[in-house]
Length: 344
Image (cartoon, rainbow, N blue to C red):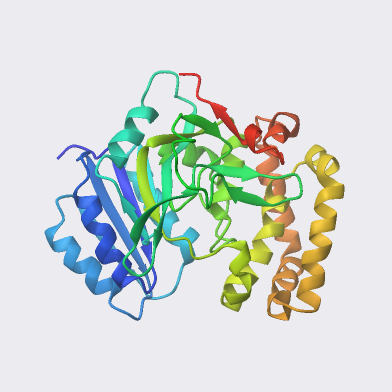
């Protein structure tokens, strides 16, 4: 049997109904050189049974790993990436369970990824539209066409919440791609692997895709949005829903906000963005001390692990081939500057 082109990495945790909707869209992909690696993070619903049922009828090689502990998004996908490296599979498609894929999603991404001149493209994403409700009903509202980094330490999904009228239908270079449905070049992931993994295990969940995007950029790998590849994603976590989110989710969000810059912001970046980030940081810390005290352990965790985190920072920055000066233009409040036309 020939080596697959793409290893599809799926990580689940109590997602049985979503899994049952996603997997048929995987089986229907026009690109057939796929293999599936599904890791279930200690689910207590029917997720593992749904995966096992799909494994029995899958048209692709299908590995199912049942973890007795929750490894998080980062830890779960890291296992699949390591397997892709071991097998020599050139691409890894990272998926959330709450997505649906158009039949030619993988085919379109691969065609762009393998086009001449795209050898330094390390990550790709399609046009991700919103899915709504338990049935993942597709909509024509944009969820993400890439990552937008701002000067005050925040990041957003480009186009999020806009009605899709074709405004993002031209392929474009972006800072990075959302991890809900992202194709990564395995060699690029191996190039940026650090002591805590391909995705940084310290993040556990949330913002780990942004950290990976920044590390890929720091090693000279680019990111591409291919709008002809369409998927749909149910977006649970939005800034305006913060009050309704579980405390643990908000805790990781706070921790990872600071961890993201601790990992990646070099001295020149810190100097250039200090004023704008300081104001926002003060607001976040103030919130943890007053109205969102459930997130206070995030700050405590950062303090307790500061020596190891600083060592990891030195590890990341020492391997940079692209400096702060070249990366800083991506950190902008100008949406027009967050997407650059693909030159090919």
